[in-house]
Amino acid sequence: MKILDPNGLVDNLYKYVQTNIEIAKVEVQERIEDTIKKVAIIAILVLSGAMFFIFVLLTLALFLNHILASNYLGFLIVTILLAIIIGIAFLILKRFLPTAQQEDDILKDEEY
Image (cartoon, rainbow, N blue to C red):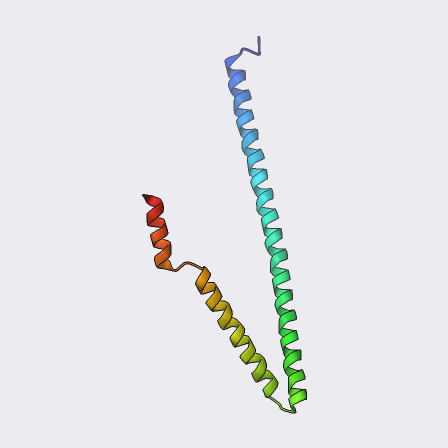
């Protein structure tokens, strides 16, 4: 009776475990590949968006230069607007993101 043969049973069990390990490896590799593809697509979109934004700002600055009959006022106005926007964004983020001290307090509360 080969079915009840202990050596054959151990061999079959060993092959079963090895097969499951290989399947797990393939699944992990597929997940990593999918994640890399998603990150690459997001990076391309972010870079394209950044380039678009830069060209829009350059166009706006050159248009303002033309309207104001100046070589630099359009760029100065766009720079000041960007500084204001960044300042407002910083203040908003600072209000909503916890500080390091608040994070430490939260972690201490969770430990107890």
